[in-house]
Image (tube, rainbow, N blue to C red; front, side):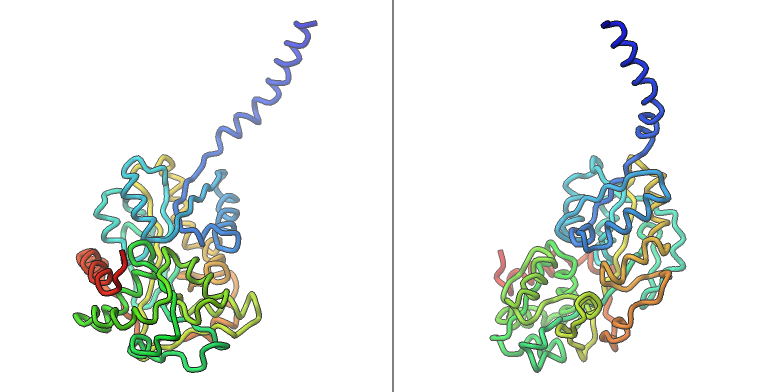
Length: 337
């Protein structure tokens, strides 16, 4: 009897072996990114499904608060990082990211990518862009600021939620936006703006959540943010303020780790970033502008968005050289610990 049971077990196992072998052959690509990218409403689920159809692999997204936090985590983990690919750094961080020695050349021809002012890099591949903006609630603000000067010097009772430049790419974007306009007088501008800041959050999601809950009438976000409310909620309640001086741009990028366990898959993924399989998930899931062709035209809401008259963008090298000093300047002026 026991022998019969053993033989049946052996037969069952032999029948399962081909399936087990196939399962073992399926590799896992680990992608570090930011939390909103991997949320159920973000582009992550669609990107994962589309890439898995082409790769015979499993995509494992690992989310952290925001882009700056992403770079900080990579620095802490060093060469032992589990990441194969990183999605969510931006041009303000890439020089510092390269200095870590953790990234290698992408091997991807990104000449098809289109961003205002252009972008070329042999290590990082752009996947979307957007201009930073103050988004306001039209039901509570009838006269939103029309310039950075009006934001800085406006009514302190009308508050704004912003993000921390030490952990958040939008927070760093605002820091560089203010620096681009005010230069050496940025500390004085921050000291005035401090009176209008309700809170400084670690990442974008927390501050935008406070805004949509009605706890603050303004939030630092993107010119593209109102498109979400117009498309998903059929509402024009939330709008971006057009600033006379212009707006700072964010170009988000993806890169490969030198010590990636799945190098071939990682390079395949970076090439996939510029295809419609990835780009289709950007406009209505990341609510940013795609850098390459999508399979369908953008929703009409995108034609109603603020179109900046001037775009600010510092070189990655300038940001890397001055980021710490400018953040210290911000901390002193804002009295943030």
